[in-house]
Length: 153
Image 1: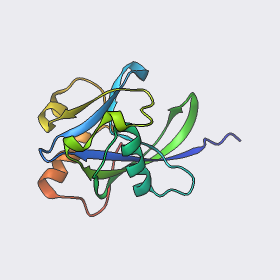
Image 2 (image 1 turned 30 degrees about the horizontal axis):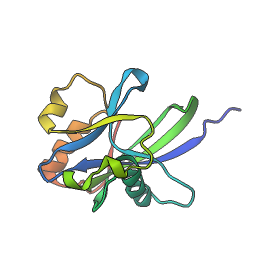
Image 3 (image 1 turned 180 degrees about the vertical axis):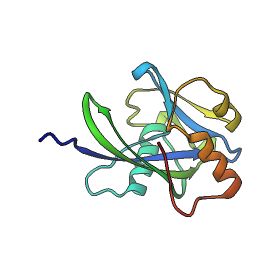
Image 4 (image 1 turned 30 degrees about the vertical axis):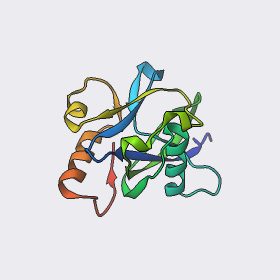
């Protein structure tokens, strides 16, 4: 019996005071944009992992971690190995001035970062993960943080 290993990951939907979302560009798999985040380290909980990942990937400081807003489960390759990944997404509020890539310590394969407006996110033909991110953000901006995290496809 071949079981797929579990990988727990914490990700951030980063919004600035202008309601723009920060996405990171990657070249692998034909290129895509994604929210910051990564796998939990031993003994770490999800909120701690989100804050660590934001510091490591984008040099974020003065992060207001609001709440868990979504989760997603999927099987996909990570480092050439199939894993079942459980991702929990947290809303993080950060001013653009509190992000400094020169402070980032683990940029992995991040090519660049960009702030997106909701209309730009809805209009893009580029691949953005997680799927449904624009609808999730629109719902939060209209209705506030959901009582229960949304389940993303």
